[in-house]
Structure formats: structure tokens, C-alpha cells
Figure 1 (cartoon, rainbow, N blue to C red):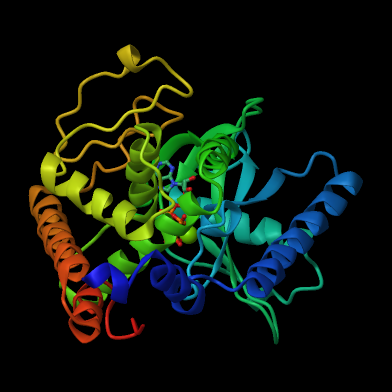
Figure 2: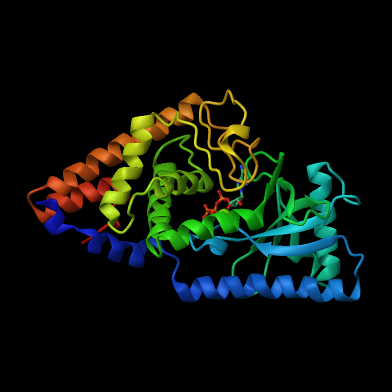
Length: 321
Ligand SMILES: Nc1ncnc2c1ncn2[C@@H]1O[C@H](COP(=O)(O)OP(=O)(O)OP(=O)(O)O)[C@@H](O)[C@H]1O
Ligand SMILES: [Mg+2]
């Protein structure tokens, strides 16, 4: 049967070869972000009143969930709220101007405001660093108003607490939690490429898997963990509210009218999925049903060729075993 032809080990090998960002690359990009942060720290030592307070690697590189296709380095920058403009476009121009000041060895054109972030480009090697502003008023847990990369709105949240939340799940199922996150992100990326209007934010995928992890699923068998993820979406029709009690009591969460409800684990009033329409949700459910069926078929297929064919429905033609 199919499991003889493609088992956990083949999925793990595929992840290593085609899905994951290789460790030497991840180390290189993290070092690149660290150098930038240290440069700002150095400037702050000389100019303690400077309004950029801290830079922090955020996103998938910080969480160990980056894909091979990673194309920029996410860095959050805490901007002292008292002095900064609160209009997003003006804030980005302000952030760019301050970054140019703190990094005088970069030419001004290497620091460019984009729609919702500021890009710092390096000459020669490395990736661009995408700096996202967070309006900050000195909160000890680093809560601040993050500029949403989806629509430019301000979201009250704490990146360090998100990293802490993710690290807890990563420790609960060492290696395997992060690996299953990357495999599902790889699937979602392919769906986005192939299906018009398909969206499925990485942070949402991570929260769903965190819930499944907290419910006790063992992630060490990848075909099974993947199947569980797709079944969860199909079974709930992606309309079951997801909440966590790490940082606030579940009873304190109010009601939301949004179709998809995945509540920010560090802010009970922030629905991470609030932009997802019924149509977006239905497209995810349909894709999850198809992926789940393909995995069922793969696990039962009589020949290697058929088994690989079913896995390719999930991961595309780069899947070979
Ligand atoms: N709606 C949101 N509310 C609160 N925080 C958010 C929201 N969206 C993103 N974030 C923060 O930004 C980080 C990056 O989110 P994103 O969805 O880009 O995932 P990623 O892990 O960087 O994946 P990718 O590899 O796709 O870039 C999250 O870990 C979270 O801290
Ligand atoms: Mg990212």
C-alpha cells in the first residue's frame, strides 16, 4: 500500500530538499538582520533620544519556519509613538528618513519606503530587509501598533510575545512542529500560485497548527499530521473560532461577526483572519478537502507511481520519491 511507497521518511526528505530554507542560508540572513540591529543599538548609545528604539527579527526567520522561497528578511522597528506621524504613508517616510540617519554608510536610495514597510537593500549579497514600523510607547512587553502588511491598518500586538508563543509549540514537538508548519505553508504557496484569489496567511496556518498541537496531536508522522490539518479545516468548515489562553482568559474574548475567527494569542480583540470573506474561506475548505482526499488516496495506493502522483496533487510536480 501507499505508505510503503511514500512514508514519513520520504516526506521528511522532500521537506529537507525542496521546502526548507537551508540552515546556512537562514544563519546568513539572521546574521544580516543582527548586524543591522547592532548598528541601530550603536547609534542609540550615542544618541539616546533617537526615536527608533529597537529592531527585532520577526516573521518566519525568527520562528524557524521560513521556506526556501523566502525573499525578504522581516524586521520590526519600534518607533517612539510620541514623535511619529500616525498616518501610514507619512510614518513610512519618517521611518526611512530616520533609518538613513542611523545607517549613514548606506546610500539614501538603499532605504526606500514601500506601501506598508521600508526596504533596506544591501549591495551585493544577502536579501533585502523589510522593515515594518511599530508605534511604541514604552510598554514593557513590547506591545505596540504594528502596521498590518495586509491593509496598512494598525494592529495592537506584541512580536516578542508571538515569538514566545511560537517557541512554546516548537519546544513541545521539537523539529516536527516547525516542519509541519513549513510543509503546510509550501502547500498554501502552491495553491496561491495556481488558484486565482486564493489566500491563506502564514500566521493563520501557524495558529491552526498550534491549536492542533495543543489538542495533543503527535506531529512526528508527517503524512498523518498533514492529514489532520486538512481534516480539521474540512470538518469545521473553517468556521470554528480559534483562541488560546496563554496570555488572557478565553472568557475575556468578545464576540466577532467575521466568517473566519483566529484570535491573536496576545490580543483578545484582534482577529487575525478578519479580512477573510466567505468566498476566501470556502476556497480554503475546498482546497483542504482535495488535499485530504489526495493524501487518503496516496496512503492506500497500490503502486509507487500512483502514490507519488497523489502526493504531487498536494505538493506539486517537484515532489519525487
Ligand atoms: N493580523 C496580525 N495580527 C497580529 N500580528 C500579526 C498579524 N499578521 C502578522 N503578524 C505578525 O507578523 C509575523 C509575520 O506574519 P506572516 O503571516 O508574514 O508570517 P511569516 O511567519 O513571516 O511567514 P512567511 O514565510 O509567509 O513570510 C507574525 O509572526 C506575527 O508576529
Ligand atoms: Mg514573513
